Length: 227
Image (cartoon, rainbow, N blue to C red; front, side, top):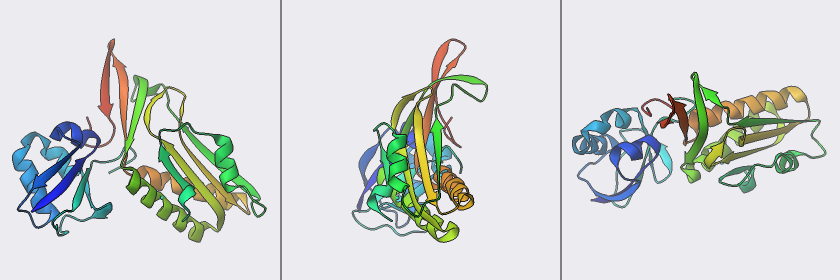
């Protein structure tokens, strides 16, 4: 049968393609991974550490494959191993703190907490020139909207908004903003931290740092299997 394969970040680099039609005899994700390992032996490490999605939903390796499925190979994201459409934005547009504040502020909000992530100039003792962010956008929106829904239930917040920027960013540029409004500050703080951790752990967003190492620029994918 024929399926569509998509590879992201370090997996794309190792496999040598971003998207292609794949003829497969595999019945499951595990069988497909086996076929890919045989075809691309040097990619075995990244294939082993990656997660997989079928038609934009995370699946286990025992998941069955069907004709026409779109399978995404998602290597570990940089931080570890999207209710309302406007609550989550993942694109290459510049971040506005005013936009984030206005997205959540309201009469019931006694507190609004903003977290802003920026590109720092050093990481792991090495000088960072730029960071390039890449994402599987539709899945990011699903994951982060679900996280906001969970945060509403757990922390009794009024509203939340997440915007993550993609593309190449310079040092000190804003890469992400998370805004949370709640009646009381404790809930706003706790929910904001929860959303940040969920973003880092579960959203398929990858970072490639351009580092200056001994006078030359080297690009490194962050996360297991990325180097």
